[in-house]
Image: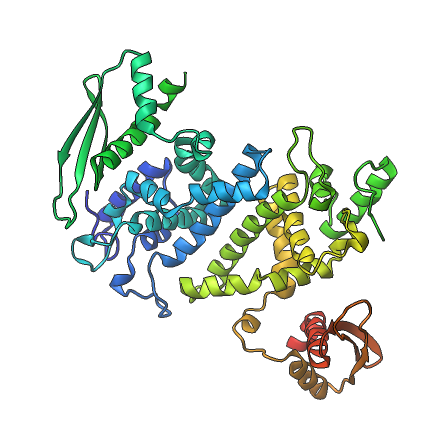
Length: 244
Length: 244
């Protein structure tokens, strides 16, 4: 679905379509829809509000970043009573790393909402994390701290934050998956193919299947990296099974 | 009042004294008193909890720092609708600067609560800001986000955050005070004296009086600096009168 040019100057029907798409992510209907529109407005549009200040997602990104930092700090503070301040700081850096936030934004496919004047919305990778933070800022402005905290638990902490992983106890997701498949008589297969597309660097894509089902995909500049990315994604999908 | 060695291994009467002192700051009785005790335990004691992890204020300081950052970000986001992300970031840096936090901790005289094994509790200046952040962490752990937000409004934002000042519109508090005194026929006097004390560097102290009353004090390595510190403190005390 492509919302480009639908967010502003939008008809009521287009607004409703946008609201429903946001609702699908949040699990409830957003109230102050303008914050969400702002969260997906790129600075390239050079849009301003009635007072002349730039209207784009960057202010909400600033807010979302701060709220995310606080929620994660509080989570770690409670979750790791044995960790000193240096350790908590380090864990938080891993959770809110640019790389991780980009992954979160990509998983929600937030880029489909962006309005910009850049051709093909070709922004570079950080757009995903920026939009994710801006979305957090919008939720906070719309619904306040506790709603936002719940969102962060649901989308950041529960699916992704695995203290053992952050502590480095898992170094290869591929090995974890293979070990699990052998124990549980599952057939794991990595289907790797060259997929350079429009990139200047050579790229590889991987489809990871368990028994007959494709569970996850990965794409990177080496076969090994692409396999590890796909393995990590599969790990989180299969986590309830892997851990029992 | 000196609480040293009273916080841990304390009698119920000593606990009550500590609780009442905290209550006097917060305006309500703290519930989970152990968080406040931890907030004033210095690492030099090398104290550990039953599981062997270091027990000192640093974890709470980590938490408090994050909560403070979020509350200030949200305040600025709402307060300065015309400010872009870079501007909000810059304003926040000023508010949560080490120097400013030290001032806040000093004003509450938080150091009187500290338990340490350092002779004369001679910690250096950052102790004030660290304790202030740890206190914020304790309040959050005791009472949650909204209570903490209110505390930060009352102790950081309302008395100290003056967007005009942060924007650099006030460069000398002394000039502002003198201008105000001339307009209002007040007699301002700076009583400066050498006050090097135990320091190796020469220091000066200033008492600032308005008419006959001493309004504030300042101490620094130059007369000019000490006067400016005292002026700034006086400015915030007199702010309601100065602004009307």
